[in-house]
Length: 469
Image (cartoon, rainbow, N blue to C red):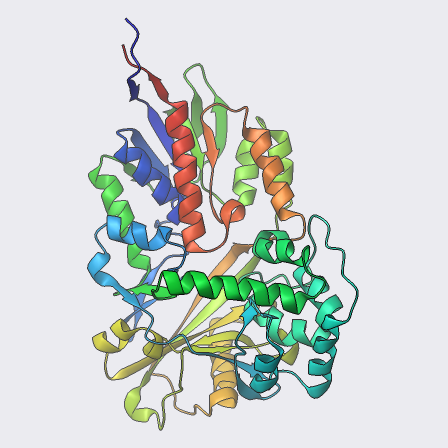
């Protein structure tokens, strides 16, 4: 007798225990499937890592959830962290440019200006740079095609100074440089608006007005943190997965993926796991190795994805040693100025939960990019403190300092990235029971990784849905 009802069955192996893999595992175990998560590292969570410094809780990885994209906040609530969510106490960010901390100009879109008056008031650009920016209003349209590098496009319209002093520091996660970053991947809305406007200033202004209208209709914080650290989100998701019957194998990199009569076999150093379906939530190179025998086109594309590394220097100061606290949430540093640090976050100002937990300490952290990571930890701490002193006048000695290195942690969305991801997805579409997710496909931010993982889990559920009867 036929019926329209369905049932789902099977064992799914999720390869990769970062937030994308954890999210996929949560959805799959919630649907009643048996799930095993393989993680090459000794811990799950990927770039979400809660820790402490001098007894003060802090994040040693990602430290904020972009709240205007709802997936991360929704996930936090779903795994029992609703009472721990906290908005950022301040989001006031400066630019340390040309030797001074300067106001971040209003009306920009990831550093691309849309308001000449606000740009002039900020003092970020020289008089010559401001005059060159204004030329955008009379220049002929720029052909953008299917994709174009953000830096190249902005330089054509506004001149080089805008790229160096605004766009480059705002593109911090895309550490490969503005002249290589894909507008279509990072700012697709700008690409679309640019096709309708001869002036880039007018295009950005339109986008900013639309964003302001949306914000007024759905008031809420821009960023949310988690009391105890955003890293607790990964821990909470993992706990939910275990409670639903999922299991974790850490220090177990997947070494091979093979077809079997029942589906797939995943080989590690010490065992072979039979699986009805597999979610690949790994960095691009690991996914390329596993897919090479089955989807060589996808593997070739994935092997071309570049990565950048970053170091975080977290320091804690005795508040009694500080003559004055730095204001705001921190500052960004244009690489053109040749400093060691690329950002500074005044965590003790930004997150109330840190100052509540350690009222006698002031915690801050700096980011340091690829070109400096050959230096040892002590040297990075010293260089970070030197830059902080030059920028803010900070002269106190920290009571503790820690360096966290995220090697090859940031996939780079170079020109043509959206088309590359489309080709990858087409290449694996014919592989039954295989889905991919993670920062390389869906966006570097936490909400984007979560959204991509949820889509991947739904693909697996659809593949494993069979008629009941």
